[in-house]
Length: 93
Image (cartoon, rainbow, N blue to C red; front, side, top):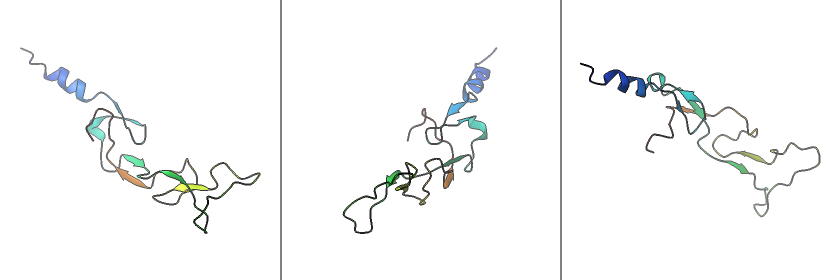
């Protein structure tokens, strides 16, 4: 008799999509080093006078006045500064 264990294992091993890094992964290979992401937002940099935000000049890249609040990286495509387990859209947070 088949108790459905094969189907259960097959369901477990279906690839999932990580909500943080948007990579596909198999749950059996998910480790604390699998997901690389920024735990904070890409934000606009405040001017030194704290009353206004930096304004871009002609020729500046569109992200020149912005950065990741967690690590200071100024490129929106910068590799994440933190690693942890992937978190699926199916997982409870």
